[in-house]
Length: 344
Image (cartoon, rainbow, N blue to C red; front, side):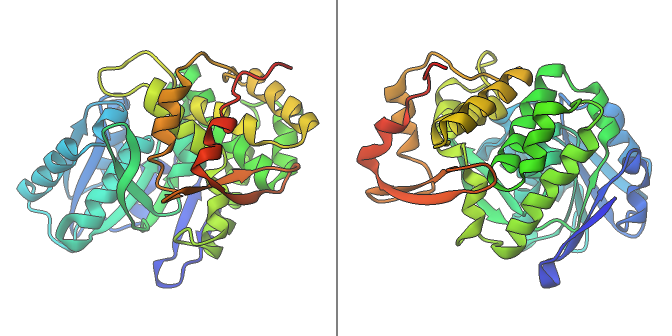
């Protein structure tokens, strides 16, 4: 399957096909320029090697696995490696891995020599469903997620569902939280597929429908001036939880991004029956529906959210299945949003 992100001069194809990682050369020039392949230590080595084998002049650079690599120190190290590899403005960075690799690689491509070509090859459900398209790249500062970054659209995105076979089951489910989000805000049929379908058998359909939701929103609002805010559903609270309890750096125990988003979505669903349905779907996917946490710490992190503006912050609510609403509320109302342990 092929989708095209229609953004004028910044348009690009999204290829969703089993085995397409082996055919990257068909979608971008790997022969007449240097190719810098960025991956991380948690990604099976054969995926980067599959790309390298197609390159006339390729370099593989591996960063440590985890959110901790989305930092200024690792960013500087990658840029130094790109410079040492002799990359010029005509060369290419290929990200092979999950959301961390895609975010980091995209930002390195956006800023190296003021911008070079970038191709994203996501290998996790989270990145295949959500983060690989749309052009958001970036780094964290301390515990504040994605506060440094740029909009930099890839030249192509290749989504190979075969790479999900090596993903730990918890990570597989973690990424599906973003597909549940897409269903709740814009695609009732996708949400109902989670309720009644076979997740493994339907994974390509889930990825495809999730991409359609995000593609349509990004095309209407590339730089998040309006409609693209819908994609932040679950993330205001979710990012606060992730900063306090997320797996990152030396903190190896805790919650993954999708698990935090799952917790962040539930309080923002206004329809009680839909909230109950969403909770059942999250349980089916082995995603958390409640957790013990220090709410004051979460609140402090939410106040650093980039969606805030002085004394107010914009939050996304879902009044019913397939629709959403952006509310700008005073920061003083944030504590009331932290009812994360509501009982059935």
